[in-house]
Length: 255
Ligand SMILES: [Zn+2]
Image 1: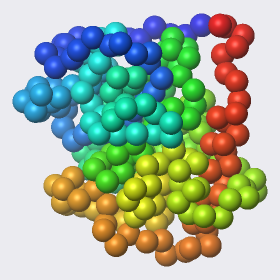
Image 2: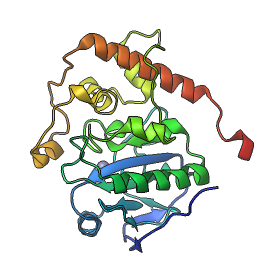
Image 3: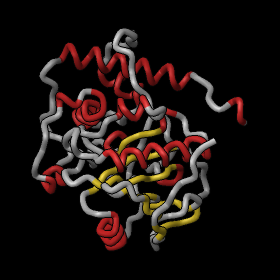
Image 4: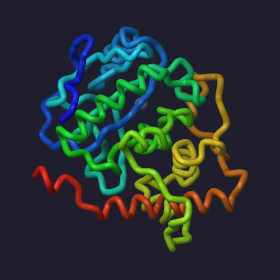
């Protein structure tokens, strides 16, 4: 049915706990530095993640899937429960030297490995497409990763996540409501708008070469779009796509 995960190395973090909930989400991250370096950094910060994919495509297992890893922090997505997605999610870090700023940010080898990992997780845990998210989707005020360079359209073409049809629009016109329909927490509208554009309208998001500045301030406080008409059309198309996906039943045949 699927290729087994081909893990290159297993080095489990000390920072995990028993998982009480079901796995429902996959959170995609990116970090600079090799997997070995990332593991050191996470351990130093008391954080963890399930997998790290190196630029060469090698897969490192840092936490067993049956344990909760500390990768999402304060976060939410649509109707997610509680303060964080950690309990119900799998976290995957991908190595990216410039923190996902451009279309060149992710190596082909790392993306090929990511598709394999998603194939396994989707089948094994019956992950719904709308619940494959980026860190900045679920924590728009705090996190810029995996960045505007991460290719969600290509991910969709490989069978994962949600994409839109330009001509099928939500009748809703209110920006906040539309962003919330997609899944964003809209307490900070500017942050949610920026996170949306990173994923669905990356042309609107400026490349930031100073990575530490980006980490300290994941979105411009005065972020706005240049082309408002295009933004609203895209937002209505994406909101409609998520709405439709959420109404669909998945996995009936194998349950
Ligand atoms: Zn992250």
